[in-house]
Image 1: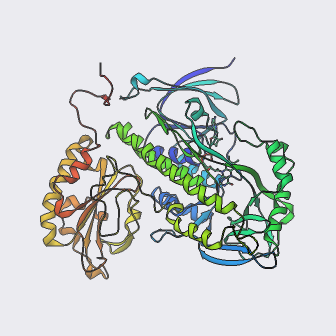
Image 2 (image 1 turned 180 degrees about the vertical axis):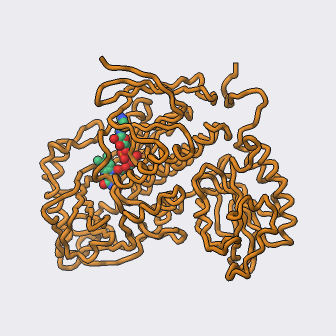
Image 3 (image 1 turned 90 degrees about the vertical axis):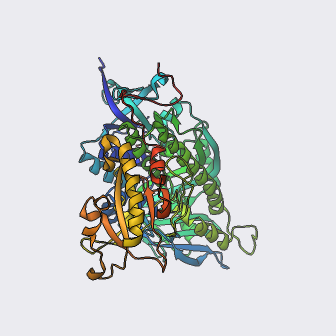
Length: 612
Ligand code: FAD
């Protein structure tokens, strides 16, 4: 007899891939009651995605997870390009830096298999007492729309029935929020009737992971894009000696076998029936790489797959801001630019602090609207980039005989022009209540909507060189960065600042400014030697709630711009205010989304619903 139990949680996450784990890890660290389930009986051992982009590394740093990623992963600093030569084989055309993003803190890619990346999250989550519940899948979900906008401590509008696939037992989980992170074939998305917009392409690719490659290819430890007369492949060096090869498949027999085993409705290929194996894929790669050789030592392949590329974005990313979809569940594209896992974790990073702030009752639930606004736009941009990139990638190379082909210059131009985009560094969020685009530029070359870039400073108390980006921890709080010129200018700006911070304090839960923000102060100076570091103890306490919150910043040029920059909890710039016009601007920004305090009610009912 199967048993059924009922329980409650704040957030329930379906799917423990990179997107689900990023969300779960962050929510657990923020003190939110969270559960995560996955239908897989075991964690991922090999395969799937492996590329971590520079912006994702910055995000890992903000959660304290970067050290392990760098220790375990392989770094890619150089990209090499090969094209056909007059003898019909391939030759090196160019080598360029792999990452084109001048402000990247970590200007390289890291490759590490998806399972190892997932383990980084799981081990860190375990310290907060949260583990993935495996072999569990939802059988139904429902949302009580009548109370979807009621944010009360005891209000759980989402109901999910979960089946334990080991013993068949059912559990009804009542949740405040549900996150569907269940991959490209998302059950959550389908059960909500959310459509995917876009198309399936005709490109068919194979992937092989070789544990012990034997090769004389000179760029076997660089990223190498190889266009040949026999097709295209991409070589990706991995952790240890491993190498991954992506191979474009246009061999008639291979394509026939794939077409015969492809499910017409969902595009899935039944790998068990394919008349193609990893040896066949390696054979194609060997032809492309000729005159160089590549063999799998011991004939061993760690993992392999074949797939067709769908370039699609979900028509909506949320239902009443109570059920969200993240990652591959809401966007799919080719893996050529190494975006899948990064975009997926980026969705969760964007969403979780908003969920935490809403559930903790200090921001208006409408802030959750910005998840779809920001991440759907990003996903659409990603798909249009992917269309261009995948086409160039899969196109035949230009040769003397084939003048209509893709030239190296064309390919390199796209590769570098979109470097800011593919690295994740150049992404900019649209204006909203949390991203106030009224005054967008700082003289520090910083723009509202972009992530706060690295900037060296010296900590005043102990003359320790630091980077501002490292101070922007993902701890759920807004960072108020106060840049002051010096004693004289500061006295004027400080008055206005203290009035503004006082207003924000009154809006903050329990009148505690530091529940919602962290104030970090930077004073112009050289900081070159201990003698040049300012006397930090003479500054007002509001600017140095702790000795570690006050710094010396060296001016970029002769001019120094005093200003206040508000950075959102996810590291993106929400507001820039020149210090001469501080009045009302800081408090207006926060009053745009901080929840209004009411005297009698413990329950907030958002606009649009009748309270009766
Ligand atoms: P996923 O990593 O797909 O995670 C989804 C999780 O949800 C999985 O653990 C799954 O078991 C779980 N799940 C699914 N349905 C349910 C359900 N009903 N109930 C409970 N749990 C559920 N990217 C590349 O860059 N290069 C590649 O070569 C590559 N190959 C891939 C091969 C395969 C077979 C797959 C599936 C993906 C591949 N990807 C590749 C894509 C890459 O893995 C994703 O972009 C990335 O992992 C997205 O993360 P995610 O968390 O959104 O989804």
